[in-house]
Amino acid sequence: MVKTYIFGHKSPDTDTITSSLVMANLEKELGNDDAVACRLGNLNKETEYVLNYLGIDAPQLIESVEDGANVILVDHNSPSESIDNLENTQILKVIDHHKIALNTSYPLFYRSEPVGCTETILFKLYKENNVEISKEIATLMLSAIISDTLLLKSPTTTVDDKKAVEKLAKIAEIDYNIYGLDMLKAGTDLSGFTIDEILALDAKQIDFKNIKSIVNQVNTASISDVLEMKDELERGIKKIIEKEDLDLFMLLITDIVNSNSQVIVLGESASLVEKAYNVKLEDNTALLEGVVSRKKQVVPIMTENA
Image (cartoon, rainbow, N blue to C red; front, side, top):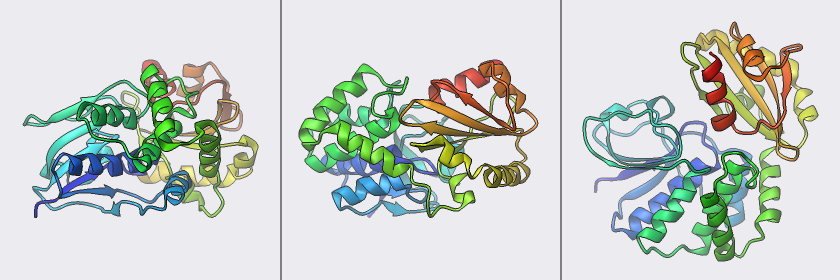
């Protein structure tokens, strides 16, 4: 039996976890009985909420796969966010909504669209392949789109995301506004996490030209509650900067209710944030009004100003 390992990025979020499960189901429906959903890290509380709501198990936790293994990448394509031995695998397919960072010496199925969530693309693939979407699969898809678009409020939200949510909510028999807010609030509960865990929950290395950076994002219903840990967070950030030899670390504390982000910034290139957003950092922090999307409101703006 030759397995096909399906997984998303490290520091997995709800889109990454649900997409691995949904893609594995689609592969099996299309005849690939050896497809297995995997994950490259621990679940966050939002994703736990979704899986507990459905009563299903998390994908298998892996650190690497055997050389030559078949893999399918979902919700990422950058080798730096994937398994360490990705270059030694056979990538069969990529389903993603991020910028392309992957080079291969062979052809493969690659589906990337500028939508708010990978699950929006998977929704289309189910339709295109005439595969029925069950209530469980619909709930997984719906949860991820709500997560990635912050209940369709994020600037990454597209018409396709909105259409998918409306159709999936009917299949799942869910009031997505009520369910979505409960799910997002579950993901803001940081109790039980250590400072190191908080700083790794949704951390991504994103270099702004020659500025080596990590941008981490945590959602909250109360920015002030998270700022009570500011001193501890800064100590943790300084350790990461030293360990990873970073020029910049940005921690976005995103208010899911008011659609703003408070940012804590440390590193030699911290002034880039002031330049990019026309703000003044006071005690390493500033309010970025209306900023909720790392992909659309951080990466391009910071890169342009680097």
